[in-house]
Length: 312
Image (cartoon, rainbow, N blue to C red; front, side, top):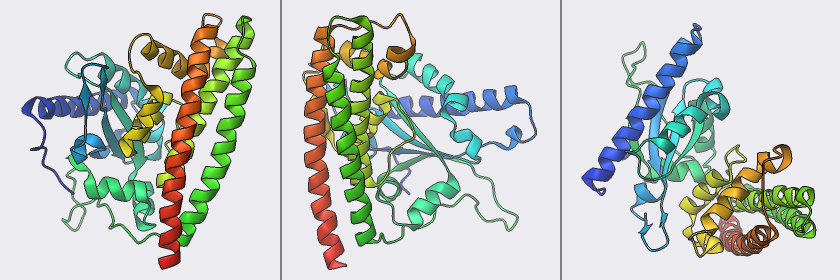
């Protein structure tokens, strides 16, 4: 795997080094506070930069304020460490508030056996990370034989026919789910607070379903999260054309997206959650566009998979 960040400016390299230190420091603090023998064996095995900053396709649009995220795969030693609420919320909060971190950081967390199983099956998403990603950190522990532990397996050859069948099923399921949720959200947009909150939650579900449809159809992978910002970041790292759905990216529309992101929890449970007919109408139209773009990209991917299955 590549280890060089020479294609990035010294400032960006320093920013990534600082992010790496925050992640390692926060995890060590969490382990120390747990105080159990088992937690003392918890480790980060590898930290891998993927997406636009690994491929050299990042962007910074000063006019709109849009900018690429840092996308990181964190490979950990124990399944308990994949619990985002238990181990990673504080890390993400610190990364968000640290003045030296100038852009959003999106983390996905998996165990080494899980990643290796996906690689062995030729899973597109993880194979792309290994082929194009950049290793920022790895645990240097050696095995009893003196050789390196924690090795990533070589990518296998995917079963083209199986990949096509899976992708086709994901596309059909999540397209219908996204459409149902969008219709339900639109139906309840009005002046009543309770109906508006119901609409906000269903619009969140429509957007989440659109991103899941895209990620699962194109890569056969989607992270186990309802965090719309993370799903959007991961999908954008795969294909930036999806960002057209949220244009223009400017005030007050950034706040409108943030309200949509928060709706998964707050629109259902918090009396303090507030939205308006204007905001909900904007969200619904943007989500309609998101579904349209994601659907077209999925169909594009399915055609490639179909041809690969025929040629296999």
